[in-house]
Length: 326
Image 1 (spheres, rainbow, N blue to C red):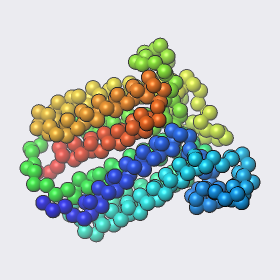
Image 2 (cartoon, rainbow, N blue to C red):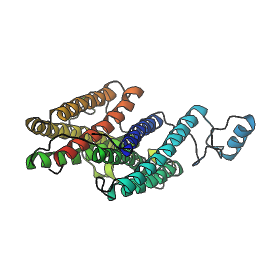
Image 3 (cartoon, rainbow, N blue to C red):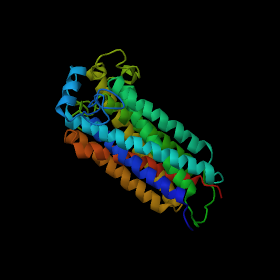
Image 4 (spheres, rainbow, N blue to C red):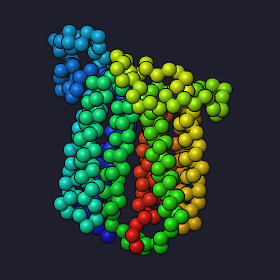
């Protein structure tokens, strides 16, 4: 069956969002999130200052944040792509509302438009609040949600002659449970990254020689860093250890539940998506362990975020398939 133009537009949005997620990860990992101390410009300009007079003005206006051109350009390229993504999102949403109301529920494009506006606000607060952990994590989660909502629109618009399978309640429950656990694991990953807890445990599978550190709920206090001039210094190291250990435990739990879900998918003859999910999960686990053993190499860390986004989209697609109405 012929695909609609809006379907291809939504697919383009997914690809562009994936690129922005990778750029955001690269920006965060290269410590370029404050490469430009103001927003939306950079030292008062729409581009990174390059002329002697512009650089002198930037130095005068921001004496405590000297211009580092490489980091500033990293941040600005991320903003340019994010701004373009915003236009694409509004285009996809409006096209879905106008021409595809029978296939795409109204709440889906409306939520997407509200989300992209909130994402812009989070991008601004990331700079103005100096990388406050809860804002940085929220910005990452917002990117994943944008990716997922664009994917859902594409799934709804996908033309297919494939026959519908009968309702399988255990499979549907397992699919939702696994998706919820994955969302929780994405939250833990974002909290780990935003609090610089990725390298607090250089050993694996233990964490500083322990299987499980003394738990402290303060490790997950979302107000961490509020009121600090440098929010990233607000958390004690032992709390970062708790975050890292919990992230590892979450990965173990998610892997176990996913294996059950994959078995049910295979038995229900959803074999293609089950192979995709198994491959992505295996790759993600390998990247996560490599991040620890090789001290967070930049390409591996960026790929860990990217594969996490692909895994999220694949789980959404699997749930879309098993919950499709006959």
